[in-house]
View 1: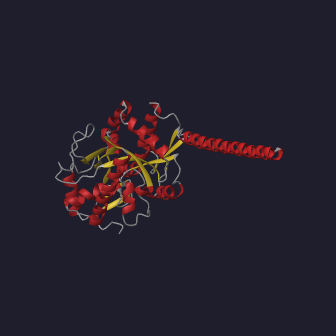
View 2: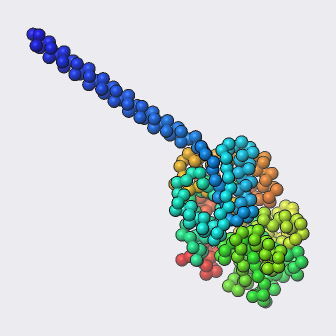
View 3: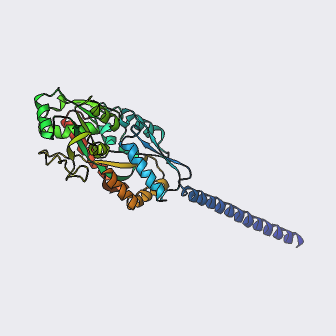
Length: 349
């Protein structure tokens, strides 16, 4: 009887111990889950350190200028409290930076960049030296668009685009055109597309590439080029100062001052349009938290009075697209650029 009692007590103790250990194990798992949840919560505190925005061009260029405007407004309005720095990285019209970014910074949530159709062109044109395009990034938002311009020096004999193109048609190798991008890239296409539409032989146009908008403007003002292909925001101060004449602007309608007297390409008898967007990108493997943060902040920024004032001051046209809309825009424009480059024998096939 006693022996049976002892056996029963032993069984009860084993059962109690088993239940206790199971409860401890369960508590331990709950703690691990809690820690995992806590870790996820901590990840949502992004950004926890300074963020670098790369301008894939020289200091003072269009990308550098745009990013300094964006980061200043994000900071001044209190939308982003973390420190933001802008770092120019010139070289190869953006190809040097992109080759590094698409291979070494694929998971760096703290390094973003601004680009334009140049990102697509460099990937699509022949001999562009980069196999990387927008699909090697995370498109976050398109912010504004700029318009291409064709300009000459203030003392140039040409007062309108037709007279310039007629002279170049008759003397194809006499005049040179400066641009702040590589052959077949943004500035080159800004001049080449309307010239081709007008009937000029694209292969005979003497295009001189410079590494940035400021360098190409210096070439024009210094007499080292006869014409300039650029964007409205980069030439406005020179037009206002009377240092250049803008012969045409690639916009659907005339732009406000100081471009109010500058005809559009269509007004100049040329049906060619090539608007130039500016947008923010992140790394290809960007975390959802970082993407959501910047998507939200940039969407809020474009609604601020400060951003509206900056658009007017810089001559930029509002062109906000969220991540999904931006990605669709990129896919559509990629096809259009491919078609344009093919027509000139410059496509990377």
